[in-house]
Amino acid sequence: MLYLALLVVLATQISDTVVAADSRDLLQQAIETYQSALDTSDRGQRVQSFSRAESLFASAIQQQWTEDPSHRTSADLYVNLGNAALGAEHLGPAILAYRRALLADPKHRRARQNLQHARGLLPDWVPTPEENIAIGSFFDWTRGLKPADWSGLAAIAFLITMLLAAVYLRTGKATARHLAIVFGIIWIGTLAKPLIDQSKQSQRLAVVIVPDVVARSADSINAPARFPEPLPSGSELYILDDRDDWIRVQLFDSREAWVPASAIDVV
Image (cartoon, rainbow, N blue to C red; front, side):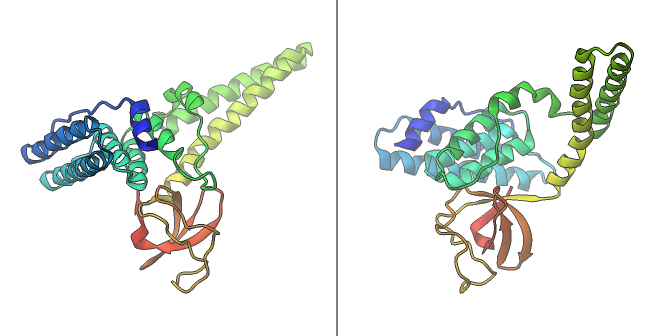
């Protein structure tokens, strides 16, 4: 019932995408199947229809790549895939799809909102990235800035800081000092932002896509469990090391563990 309520809250509208003929057919089937699922009152049939729509959306994406390897899947299509997966009660694939939508378009508001709703279905003990949708929306304009743009902003913030500091030294006004401190902090932040983004991009983000994965303290099925409970599908984590069938991961609370490679998918 939680999933059905979530779908109502999201008020999902399936967006069509112009694609090549074969993938367009798959996409149309996916849209029709999704709409059919929304109109179905029987829970079992509804989940089954959403699962079918999820498979069709995924096949459409795969077919796009087959038809044109340089094709970039739209954020809308990933959101559609995520909504279908959520309706099918596949929380991990849903969160993965929303994360890929944001990778394609960091400003995609519906993907961000749906991702936050999906994260809310995870157990409380599972750490998730700390994001504030309201604050994030307010600063949306910064998401498309390049490193050179941040350098320009840093130069402006530094200039204002120095001017305010000069005013304070000449007049002794506390207001000028306080503003100089504020713009000094902004200057440091704009200098650090590109370095932080580069560090994040160097880490591979992954999502658990199967239910109840026992995280181990070492890369062996015989190693003791790292956490009291298995990682649920939908857990987000960073990949630290790759050893064939085992992956060393880090959760968003900095705890590390080993999980089977087959249990996760890279964003």
